[in-house]
Image 1 (cartoon, rainbow, N blue to C red):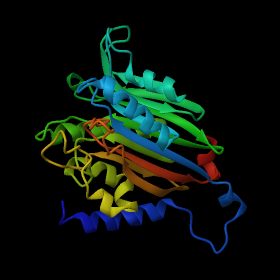
Image 2 (cartoon, rainbow, N blue to C red):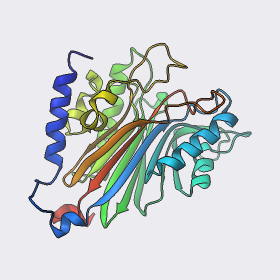
Image 3 (tube, rainbow, N blue to C red):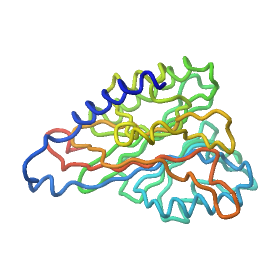
Image 4 (tube, rainbow, N blue to C red):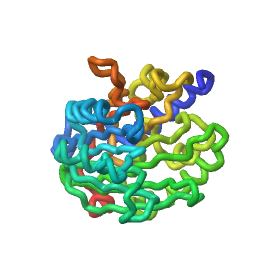
Length: 288
C-alpha cells in the first residue's frame, strides 16, 4: 500500500480538481449559492458486543457530526431488536431507507440503510451478484440548495480471498449508478472490505471516482478504519468516493473513533465523514 500511495494521491487530486469549477479571482453569484452537503458512513457491527451500551454512543456521535446523509452497514432487526436504522433515525430526526436481501415481512432482516434530513427526490435499490452473498446497494437522490446529489451505499463481500466477488459486486453497483444517476454528481459510500487502491476497486477509479479522504487528508487516509480493539490487522476499508461536475470535496476525516467514558466503543469500525460544496444547477444535469 505504501509504495502506491503517492501515485494514488496524485490521481485523486487530479480527478478531484477536474470535478470542481474552475477557480476565479472573485466568486460569482452562482458560486455564492453553492450548498454544503455532508455525508457519514459507519458499519454498525449489528447487535454484537453489548449494543445497548454502544447505541447511545452511536446516536450521540452522529448527533454531534450533524451530517445531511448517513450511510449505515450491518443494520439488523429481529423479534427482540427494533430495526437499528429506524431507531437511530427516529432519535435524530432522519428519514430512513433500509434495504435488505431478506424478504419484507420477515422478522430477522439484515442490510444497509441511508438516513437523511434532506428532501428525497428518488430512491432505489439493487441486489448484487452473486445473490447468495446477500449484498445490496441502497440509493437516495437528495436535494440541497436546488441541486440534486445521488448517494449510493453498499457493503461488499468480506473474505480476504474474495477480491473477484467484490469486483463483480462493484460492477453491479456501477451499473445501478449509471441507471439511476447517469453522469450527475454522485457519491458511493460504505464498507468495501478492501483498501482504496485494491485491484477489485479499479472500476471505481476508471469511472472517475475520487477517494475523498485520501484527496483531502493523506495522513488520515493512512490510518485504519478497523478498530484495533477488535482487529489485529489495521486496514482502511470504509470509504467515501465521489465524482461529478460542480461537486467539490472540502473536508474529510475519520470519525466515531474514540471510546466512551466506560471504555465502550461505538462499533468495531470507525466512520468516515466527508463534506462537499455542491454548485448550482447548470446545463442538462440541473434538471434531474
